[in-house]
Image (cartoon, rainbow, N blue to C red):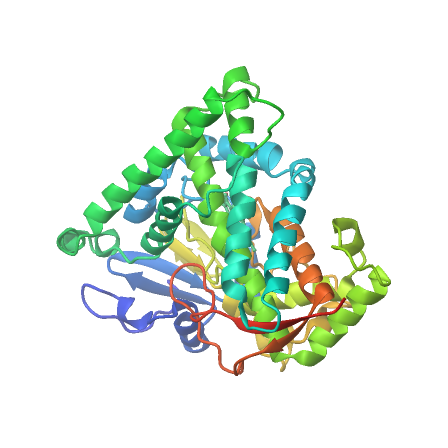
Length: 458
Ligand code: HEM
């Protein structure tokens, strides 16, 4: 007994039904075939999960069975053969690396310790906006650069954003991680990847990334150590002092650092970009947020600090509502079952790939009501539903063992930047925001950058 499946074609299975925006196509198909659908991407069985109840069964009831990751040629090539955290198969190695992330890199104490980095970078961005006077600013670009600079300083100890080879490296990485590899799904057509140059591009990028990270590690090893505590320092110290009860080698260090860039940059800036898009589309929400921020800060004209934000309930509701409608990774990161399992009445064999459609779950009318498609932050003001993995109707960061380890890191950056953007400036949209096209790829941001005019409020 298997979940229902849309009709498929020989060889390619259901691949032709994914379109440019698989989260939308799969949501559409789930209305007809149900919240647990079985598709085939080439020869690979893929279970697609599209409701809160079904997600709870996968990520809570059977979390351990579904906690692995499928092997993907692109991820293996670019992420050190799965020696990172995000692409590592479920097992002891993954558990050790994730504990390093959770306890040593992304703990609340570490997140707090980078407060000056966030505030300095944010002030620089605010200055650029102020200098633009009343000319439209490319907010997408500013927010992407800000996120990149913060992550560079936190992970590597200094900014690399203005160096063209680093920028180009990151662009190639993001682009190739989103490319479809025929060989992963239809092994006997793997030669197509070779013919179209994908294999050689992956090989070249893998070497370039490794060379860059080697240089960064070497710089840290040659340095005086000082009182720097960026992620590379922390990882090298753990390696030197063998302080975590297992060995962590050089490749693992480079792989974890790469995860921070791959997992952290696009996702965080995408969220800020969607928040600003929704606020410009809904001036009444922008006004209400500005009122909240100004009331709580009582005429403070300087940069708002993180403790100013604690009681900003409407700001938190705006961020939640944006994560509900625009989860930056709408299909999260694929999972894979390691054992045969019974899910509802279906038998799901070991080795089934699982895609959880967080985008569809955030728009379920049964959970969110008839206005599920509308941006209405108020719905969160008197609700305890949160995005930290306990409430399966809102899972932009995933849930269970594979949950994102950087929720606090991402949220605090988003909160302080957004509070300051609306505190220091009034905003006017320069274009019609009614229909905003989405990009393609793994992280879904706007297809075209967001431009807006800022007017100083001081
Ligand atoms: C708004 C920002 C972010 C969003 C929406 C987000 C979302 C996610 C999601 C959906 C997953 C997959 C969960 C699953 O498979 O069940 C994930 C995993 C992960 N994220 Fe994030 N993320 C964000 C920011 C970050 C940042 C800033 C970092 C690093 C500093 C990061 C590092 C990771 C890592 C290492 C994993 C893999 C965890 C594992 O496989 O065990 N993320 N994230």
